Length: 390
Image (cartoon, rainbow, N blue to C red):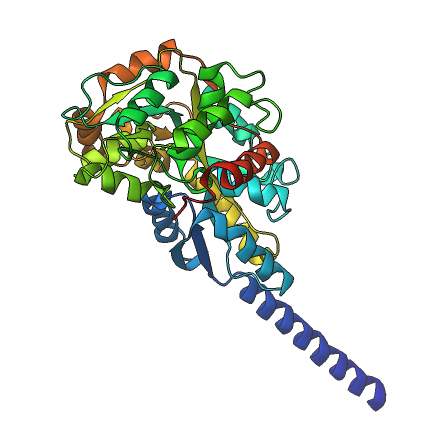
């Protein structure tokens, strides 16, 4: 009898210990997590306040958020090395179509849809029509967070350019007549650079604008001719705008946001103008939230909640920002009137009345898919920018 009693006591003690262990592990799993976000698109300018609002609203889920910026071309290699070492130092990446494409091609991103559709209820129905098409580019590996019907557009100093080019032929003639006065950045790390690259096949009438390797004969021939009067290709758009603003260059390629924002910030004079090609097609652009493979489960649950939060109208309204990715919001029913007063003021002052008509009148297309975009970047790097990229 004593033996049985002793056994019962031991079993009871064991049960208590096991329950305590489970409770401790459950409590541990529910501890707030630290999140590391890396931005390779200049996107934090639009979204950082939204991310911080999530942390403020859910201190039980998030202990801290660290924000880091990195160049898009370097990120895939860094993540690959991290994953090979079994580490997960980066929890969320905000990226343009460049690193999104490279990461899809190299198998770096966590597949979100349809695998985890239950935690993103109705997410695809939230997007406005243009952004909804851009979401398809993510192939389920990311969620679009901001949107811009980008370009290509030419931006110029009206004191130096009295008759801005309206066709690629006129642009080439102007460039030859004014050597070293036109500049654009390496497409693999520049929204305006890649929008120009992807927009040219439509303007030039190439046989297949979605096939940069076999369908862009006119585009590659044009870019090689243009190369002769371009001094060099900076590694990013900021350097281009600095040179334009300082007067070193008289013209560059741009997109709506990179036109509005540098003028609002005083980097480029407010009176600089834009010109569209006569038969332009808008190549739209977007930024995406992606999760690298290998992020632990307790963080994934928080990240999914964060991504949903970023698509709510209140956070989307913040993405009007100072016109950097004009207009900004990816979801439906977020008018400029919902944006902070400062955003409304900037866009009223530095936005362009002609954009509304251009956006309505000219056709819109999505950029190249992941594989084609990587191929276009590689061909440009090899055949156009190889000797002149800094």
